[in-house]
Amino acid sequence: MKDIDYYKDHAGDAYQVGVPDFLKTQKQTRSYAKLLFLMAINAKTDKKAFAAFRENRKDKEDLEGSRLKDVQLQVILNSLRAKHPHIADGLGSDAGIKLMNQDAQITEHVIRTFTEKGIPVLTLHDSYIVAYGDSPMLDGVLTEAYERLTGFKTIKSETVGVVFGDEESWKTDRLPEQAMIITNGYKQRLIDWLCYKNEIDNSGSVSIDGG
Picture 1 (cartoon, rainbow, N blue to C red):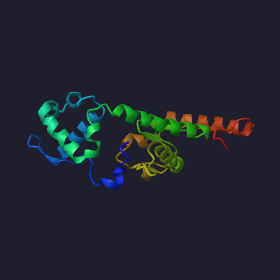
Picture 2: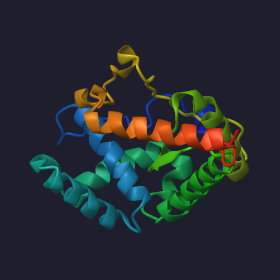
Picture 3: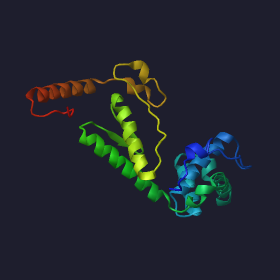
Picture 4: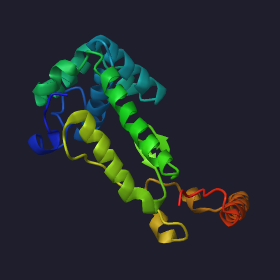
């Protein structure tokens, strides 16, 4: 929205700021700074961002974070504003509403494009789940939507995938161990779906895969 390509002009960790005297470690400071940054983007005022931060920490049973005062959280937020002067005015200004609308438009484009091609896609916040072989198409669709909305031609996305039947590819810290277990219920549903798909394909009247 500010016509700045942060990937080119702002190298380094966006949430890394100096450790204030009321926090212990750089890791803790970065964690709090990132959370506060996101809260401030979606809050109408700094004070509302601070209140949301403390409520989040209370829900996570983080006693230290839930007890931080406004004046202390202001120190962290001021450090973030100093680190990102071009977007400092967006913090504590309810800018998140516009950003979420842009996210929704990108997601709408992804769903429409995949649906028109008869390819399944699931959405989860700002992430998308497709068959592993469809990930290059997803990357292209995301780039297309991003360019239409922002005018920039590149989008930084990360692909994490697993291949059906290949247990080695499932070994990732993003998936719990139970994700590798194929239950009997899943096996039966897969068989039922394959049988149904085969019947449809053989009838010649409908093609589920859009072919």
